[in-house]
Amino acid sequence: MHILMTGGTGLIGTVSCAALHDAGHKLTIFTRRSRSKTVEATYVTSLADCAEPVDAVINLAGAGLADRRWTSAYKRQIVSSRVDLTRELVAWLGEREQPPKRLISASAIGFYGAAEDQTFAEGDVPGTGFSAELCQSWEEEAERAADYGTQVSLLRFGVVLARKGGALGKMTQSFRLGVESWMGSGDHWLSWIHLADAVRVIQHVLDCEHPAGVYNTVAPEPARHRELAHEAGRQSKTWLKVGVPAVAARIMAGEMAEELLLTGQRVLPARLLEDGFQFHYPDIKQALVDLMARKG
Picture: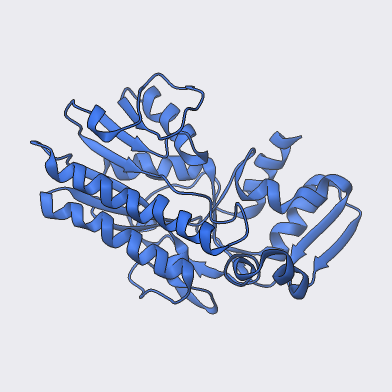
């Protein structure tokens, strides 16, 4: 299968490219920036340069939500890197003589908004706030590909935990000094997924006979932030436990703190479980035993 991928040099994309290459797929990676080419693939900086027929598109591009403070300028960059790029991608797809049969497009569980007293599955309605509105617009652009006969799969990713890069390194920076920490009360939900399982979900959806629709790309056992901190602290052998006050988080991160650091949502992968998908890391303890051991 010939696959066009955006975001192929990011956290999920890099590992996904390697896995798809190993599975025998031909890859074209659309990237606007020059990066080290770690996978045998064709790299293009313009969609116009992708002239060969494409069987599937995997759209993972997007500036990191938690990479920096949400200034007006950075929020515009977040939107452009997701919504505008997806619009461009779908327009290109519609101009093809033979449109790709499948589009697997990333989204996020921020779609549901922040809520501590609800459990969300794929059929639930969107929430409110910047993240929820972003995800709605992002998904709407991707769904336009169905007008060209393309099956559209939307992967609502939770927090992806990895050995290098991503959220885990940021969340455990103080642990290297022996200090276990969490934001606010630590009682808010974290719907997460191990990077290896996230990549396997992409492969699963790619292989599905009827993949159209939404997949919550999260582990089946969400955790509280404090639970993650305690387990990571146990793995790191920390000696001091400190909660970062909510007011300090708001001062440091502004609006982002309210949506990403101090609140969360309990999201379940109902459709993946119905498909019989087997998670290698279904609970936070298993995931951190693997990831923290590797970090060491």
